[in-house]
Amino acid sequence: EVQLVESGGGLVQAGGSLRLSCAASGFTFDDYAIAWFRQFPGTPTEREGVSYISSDGSIFYGDSVRGRFTISSDNTKNTAYLQMNSLKPEDTAVYYCAAVSRPLQVLMIWVRSGYEYWGQGTQVTVSS
Image (cartoon, rainbow, N blue to C red):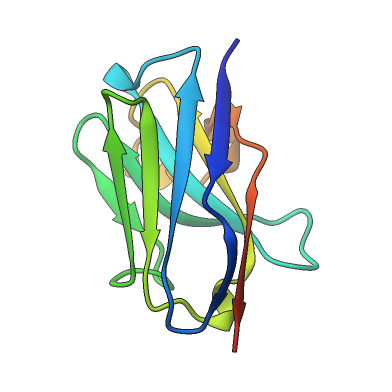
């Protein structure tokens, strides 16, 4: 059974940092793409693409987080990470990781339907 489990969310003051983890089981990172999305309060049907990493070395960031967030992965642990620095109240959201068993074309990386697996989400709250 394929599972993605996010952890590392919590409450932090503006300017602070958090590191989210996405632990995968049931598949390996050998040929993969992992993305982080976030869902803002009051928007249950919308998820914004945050960051993307794939086994072909591609890394992308959404405009609102570029320069503050860093995505990485540890294939030995089958875990992806999202280091979030200089957090702002507008970063408050539920963060989800998603995975697909092949790198995606650039135009598809923020398309939710392109991902095969999703985690349950972890809440990040940034206070002002």
